[in-house]
Structures are given as structure tokens and as C-alpha cells.
Amino acid sequence: MVLRSLNLCTILLSIAISSQVSQSLHFELQSGRTKCISEDIKSNSMTVGKYTVVNPNEAHPSPQSHKISIRVTSSYGNTYHHAEDVESGQFAFTAVEAGDYMACFTAVDHKPEVTLSIDFDWRTGVQSKSWSSVAKKSQVEVMEFDVKRLIETVNSIHEEMFYLREREEEMQNLNRATNSKMAWLSFLSLFVCLGVAGTQFLHLKTFFEKKKVI
Image (cartoon, rainbow, N blue to C red; front, side):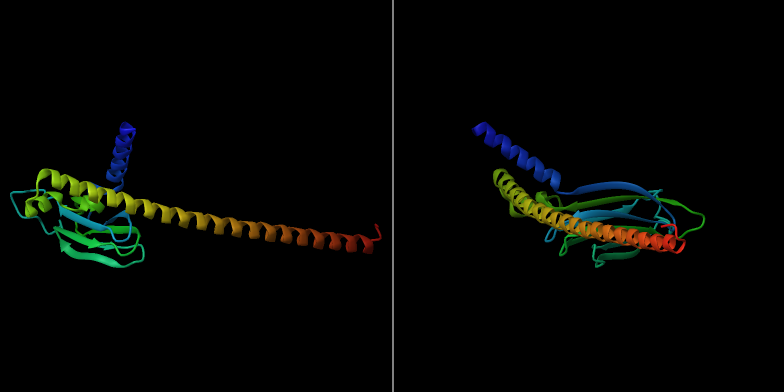
């Protein structure tokens, strides 16, 4: 029984770790082009992002061509972060709206065209919190620090379960509404087909009667 409980705990912790988003990306972007990265974030979740344009020549300052603009928006179009002509930066906010958040990077237009390399680190949920700095500031013991981190992880699992349940209910309601609309559309299509068939039958009957075929 104890072994099963330990296995269950391990599974739950694994789910929590996998469910908390931590994206560390490296991508290339051409001059004048835009590239967007989306992330599904639940409401009241903390999210932190850091981005840097890689300097092609570290011995010298970055050229003017290696500048980007970035805008982070929610699925409702609200802007949470915006910066123009920068080499690096970061953002942090608590998501008020649940849904897909979009981080769009745009490289400045430059002739001849150059390719920028960008490092982007985006963390959400438990991963967004710097636990090492928390432990350092409060001078807590190692065991107490681990317990706090586990409690935060368990709370995150609890919130994630409710969030997934809400999303499942939304999908079920959408499926019911879609099925209902499809049923009405089927009845309407059948009614139209019967009406057209009846009209054609009457038209042909009248035609043949005039021709004295029947």
C-alpha cells in the first residue's frame, strides 16, 4: 500500500513538472520578417520571458541591423509587453485571461538582408519562479526549501486539474452545440431535398398532362 502511494506521488509530481511550461528556444529570423511563438497559459498563472539577439561578433557592439521588436498579446488582443528596436529584454506578468498567448518577434528591415539568431526563454507556472533566489533570500534549510517547492508543485497540480476540467467542459459544450447544429442542418437539408423533389414531380406531372402523355 505504501509502495502504491509512493508511485502515485511520483506520477503526480511527474505530471506537474511536465504540465508547467518551460520553453528555451533558439531560432533564426531574417530582416523585415516576423515570427510568432504561442503558449497556452491558464488564468492567474505567472509567466516570465527573456530574449536576446545573439551578437555575431562579441568583440564589437551589435550592429544596427541586429535589432528586433517584440509584442506579447493574449488571445483577446490585449498587449502585455511591447518593445521596439532592442537587442534584448524580458517580461513578466500574471495572466488575467486564459488561452493562447502570442510572442511575436519582428526584425528591423535592412538591406542587404541579414539573418538574426535569437535566444528566447519562456517559463510559466512553477518554472517561472526562481526558487534558488527565494531560498537564498530567506536562508531556509534545504529540507524546508524542498517542502515549499513540493507544496507549490502540488498546488499547481490542483489548479491544473481544475483548469483541464474547465477546458474539457468547454469542449463538451462545443461538441453538443455542434452536434445540435448539424442535426438541424440535416433536417433542413432533408426538407429542402423533399421540397425540390416534390416541386420537380409536380412540374413533370403538369408537363406530361399538357402533352397528353398521361
